[in-house]
Length: 187
Figure (cartoon, rainbow, N blue to C red):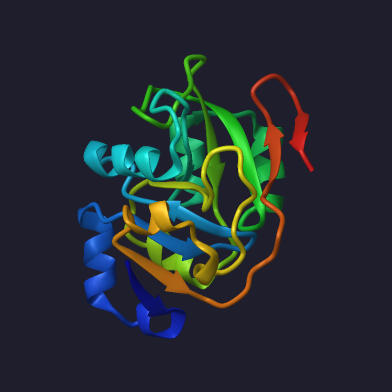
C-alpha cells in the first residue's frame, strides 16, 4: 500500500485519476479514516468488501457529489431537505429512500446512507461528480482506526493507496434516518 501525504494528494492528478478509474483507497474524512472506491466500479466495491471482510449484500454509505444530487435522486420532503441543507457538509450520514436501486449502495428497502463530509480531500472526491463508497477503516465489527499507521495488515494488502492526514478522531458520523419521518440511529 502506497502512502501519500494529504497536501501532496490534493495536488495530484494521478491520485484523482486512480480514484475515478477504480482504485481502492483509504482517506481522511471529518470523522474517521474511510476506505472507499468509485461506487460504480463493481470490482472495486468487491475489493472493499474483501478488505473489510464484509458481506457483499450489506450496503455501503456513499459520498455524494452535492446536495442537488440528493434532491434529484432520493425521495425527500421539503422539510427534510431543509434539515439536510443545515447539516451538510458535516459529520453526518443521512438515510433516505433512493428513487432507483444502485448496486452495493441501496438496501433491500431501497434506502441509502449519504454523506457530504466537511473535509478537503472529500471535496476533491466529490468534484469528480460520481458516487464513492465510504466506510470506516476496520475489519467488520472491530474498532475503526484513527491513523494510517494502524491500518490492519490484511487490509493494507487490498488497498492501492492511503491518504495520510495524521491522527483523526475516534467517532463515526452521526446517523439520521429520514425515510419514515425522523430517527436518530447513531449519535
